[in-house]
Amino acid sequence: MFFVYVLYNKRHKKIYIGQTKNLEERLNFHKERIFKNSFTSRFDGEWNIIYKEIYKTRKEALIREKQLKSYRGRQFLKKFIPL
Image 1 (cartoon, helix red, strand yellow):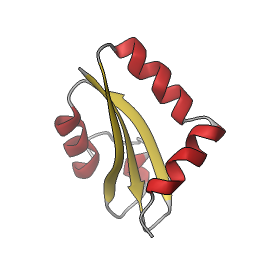
Image 2 (spheres, one colour; image 1 turned 180 degrees about the vertical axis):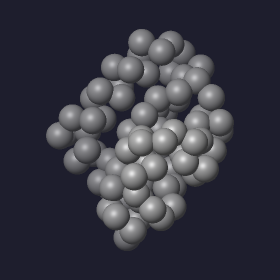
Image 3 (tube, one colour; image 1 turned 60 degrees about the vertical axis):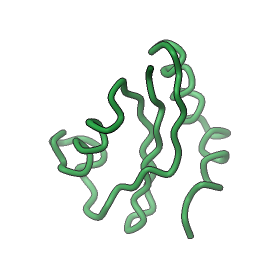
Image 4 (cartoon, helix red, strand yellow; image 1 turned 90 degrees about the horizontal axis):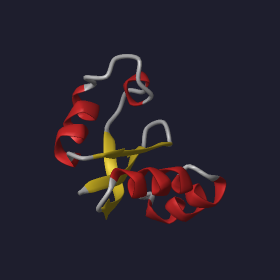
């Protein structure tokens, strides 16, 4: 299984969209800022998961990740951002 996930940083009002095979491990990487010079490590504050989807193949997950990164995909995700 592969996950497409969306993180939100309330302090900076930023969204991050990614995909992974191991969601729990990847979330820990983001929270601990394991990826130096990555998009999420550039912003202080907490990154919280606001949306996720599950796919059988990485190819399907990559296609959906690309859709969510489009203008229409980001408009769809706005309804999941906590006020």
